[in-house]
Amino acid sequence: DQQVKQNSPSLSVQEGRISILNCDYTNSMFDYFLWYKKYPAEGPTFLISISSIKDKNEDGRFTVFLNKSAKHLSLHIVPSQPGDSAVYFCAATPKAAGNKLTFGGGTRVLVKP
Amino acid sequence: KAGVTQTPRYLIKTRGQQVTLSCSPISGHRSVSWYQQTPGQGLQFLFEYFSETQRNKGNFPGRFSGRQFSNSRSEMNVSTLELGDSALYLCASSPQVAGGYNEQFFGPGTRLTVL
Image (cartoon, rainbow over all chains, first blue to last red; front, side, top):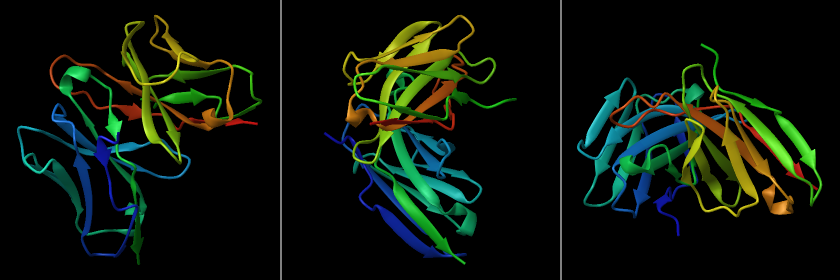
C-alpha cells in the first residue's frame, strides 16, 4: 500500500523554465510534508517543507503547495537550473510519528541547458 | 559541523552472513533513523533511535535490528542476509528540538551487495 505516490517517474525541462513536481498521499494522519533532492552516491538533501496548517511555503526558487482536500502537494522550481538535475522525493509524516518519514518513489528531473 | 558519516561506504556479503553498519550523527543530534533504498521498494523507514531507545519501527523482519550508544552513534545489523537485502542503507540524524518537526540530515549511505 503506497501511501505517498509520485506518479511521474521523470521530468525534462529547459533551463530557466518552471519545473513542477507532483505528489499524492492517502494517509489522512500525515500533517507534515517535505521535499528532498538526491544526487547519485549521496544521501537525500532537505529542500523545503510544509505543515498541514499552511497551503503554501516559499524558499527562494522553491515553492511547495499543499491541497489537503485533494491530498496533493506540488513543488515548483523557478527558474530551473542545470544543477537542479537530480531525483526529487516527497515525504510525509504525522508529527506524532516523529522522524518516521514515508517517501514517494521519486521523480528524476533533467534540466537541459 | 561535520555531516552524518556512515561506514563502510560499500560492502559485499554472501547469503546467510550477517552485517553491521555504522552511523555517526551530526554532533549534538540525538535522533538517528535508518532507511533502506531499493529500486523496487524505494526509500523505506527501518527504525529510529532516540536516547538509546528505539522510538519508531518500520515494517521489516526481525533480522533487521539496531542500537544506539550513549554518544548517539548508531549501528544497524542484518542477520542471515538474503539477496533482497541488497540496497543502499541510509542513516539520518535530527536535533530533536522540542516542539514541531525536526529536519533530518542524511548521510551518504552504505551500499550493501548480497551475493
